[in-house]
Amino acid sequence: MKKIYSTLLIISISITAFAQKSDIRDGNKFFAQAAYIDAADAYENVNDKSQEVLQNLGDSYFYTNQMQNAAEVYELLFLRHSGNVEPEYQFRYAHALMAVGNYVKADEYMNQVTGENWNHGEFAETLDTLVPHKFKYDQVMNNQSSSDFGIAFYGDRVAFASTRNQERPIYPWNKLPTLDLYSAEMTDEGEMTDIVLFSDAINTDQHESSATFSQDGNVMFFDRTNEDRVKNEEDVRVAHISLYRAEKVDGEWTNIEKLPFSSEEYSVEHPSLSADGSKLYFASDMPGGSGSFDLYVVDVNEDGTYGSPQNLGPGVNTPHREQFPFISEEDILYFASDGHQGFGNLDIYRTEGDFSEAENLGASINSGHDDFAFVIKEGDEEGFFASNRRGTDNLYQFVREENEIIEAPTVTDETSGQDIIPIDGSKIYFDFDKATIKPESEPVLDSVVTYMNDYPNIKVKVESHADARGTDKYNMDLSERRAASTVEYLVEHGIDRSRLTSEGFGESRPVNDCTEPTGCTEEQYAKNRRSTFVVSNNGSSMDTDDMEEGSEMENEEEN
Image (cartoon, rainbow, N blue to C red; front, side):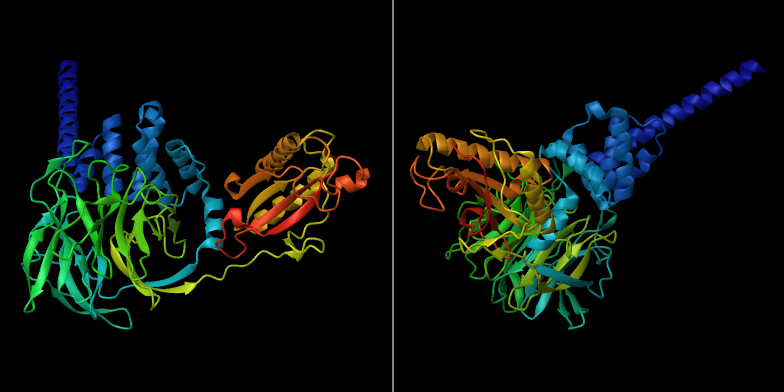
């Protein structure tokens, strides 16, 4: 009898082991095909999950927006294999944590990945005082599909992408039909009516999405997925995306052509045509970028040819994803990114001019999930965006309002006429020939810290000065050391260094007639031994170097 039980136990273990190997084999096959729902189903059945299984299972949840599950699996991955996990899993884990609201832990992982100081609490609080607009939004009605996104203005109608066509093939990534392009009317109540498929000249069994139109509505650029799948850097077979152009002739879309800078080896996607039709913005993971997807612009020539795509540069692009550009009629570029600091996954940003700096649009529109495909009519202060914050991609209509930024209070200094920080006391003291902050100076500096915490939009430039005793060079060096030590005190007491700059002016800016090394009393010389706290961003977008307002604090000693 014991031999029978032993035999049955061996058979049972063998069957279980075979089943586990089969689940892993199936999971790997589905994962390599980017069939992430099927991959997750297979990996879930594996009892003793290896590092590879945990990585792939976490990614399968992440790529299908199951963020709570993704966060739990990534947590297990790092508990078991923390020393051997590649940074991209830290990055995705951090974004999964943000999606479920755990920003404290997300900051820890983002700090490790980026080498920067991510502090969501400070970021959100400061951003709230800086963003120029607030957004009020509602989900678009008649949003009947599991996935609608990418609205474009199309004359007096809109165009958008949707998986609502049940006659299309099922896409294995998310088990939904492939995307088609539709047009619709949009009522004042935010309901889409008269929803019409674009013709078969535009829509195929592949994905079509992200349309953009010329001002007269007779030229359209749009995305279409390539038929062939190609292995990416992660050894997953994906169908890349190409850009197409179409013309409307006698009311019908025709002359469909692939743009010459599209490829079977990488994606070129999400076009946005400038108001004058001369420039086309798009996203691509073509070679030579910053990593993942970057934003590009290409000239659209009058003869129908195109210039060479130009990368928009490091002010916009990061080693991670920048996608869904939209260039407004005022040449403001809006885009989605998960590489800049934000609220989690794709956030919506804006940039203009030389595109040297990206600005997050703030918490009134961004969430911990993917927020993207933003379009706006600047003059009407209205537009649309897409988000999967409710589980699947949905369309939202918004109204934009001015953000009432509270200016920091100031008082006018009777001597200089400058607006200064209203702090109690103005004098701090240094020992002779020293740049060390003395204890009696700390209450004043603590008041500066409190003021900057109360008004997180404020930036400060510390300007330090010397009296006329000593050589010009020595006094310049001494004043720079004092300015630096003042900044260090503020940083050590919680003020972000990015809000502070410093400069020493030596003896070049006296407040009285004591311009010679002799001839004045100690008290008179002391008035020139001061530090000035010059304020910027007080309800404006001034640069730190252009600051005009200040707060003077007189120092005790000068060389």
